[in-house]
Image (cartoon, rainbow, N blue to C red):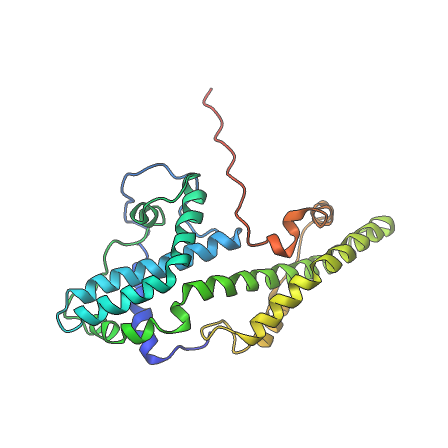
Length: 273
């Protein structure tokens, strides 16, 4: 991971304090349809969870800075400007997370924050060096790409497409070794068709990421990240798993244009006997 500029580091350190400790109770509220943890299996929701957490942390930090006379005005002004720029991303996160957790339209942000087990205040006392450093750098930090949620969401969708494409290629190699002749031929035809259909989306995502690689990305360049992704992506599974994978290549949800879609609603809980 590349180290951000020092001015960003102070803010980032404070935002890390937003997550709730595991032992803290969650206040009573409307029942969530999902578990509160990160949705690693759903790229769009995982991205929205991260972006919502960043926005929530910035909101808490701004509130703390406004309590300090020397930072009150600059914190308020920079936050209002940042919030205006990020409103489309914030509205989308509210909508997606509300649907994911509650199956409804936009829910108020306090309810979402409690559901995600985020803190409602920072732990830093008003006279702490860490808080003052973060408040001093807040206006400049909010101008950085790191806190441009609209752009981050766009880039994370592109990255999700590349990750999915690499996973398909790794699974393809794994499963070809397990299929017998006829199944291997059928799978090869399915995979070739999948590649043909998805090549434009993969090429577009790769080109856009190469030209606008995030400053806080997990590698110095897109090429470095892609090489690491190929090295670190592993495949496993039984012959039955490979058959499921091969059949899935025919379905719309495996198309790269759909990997950032909303997840299906959860199955209803079984009725008590």
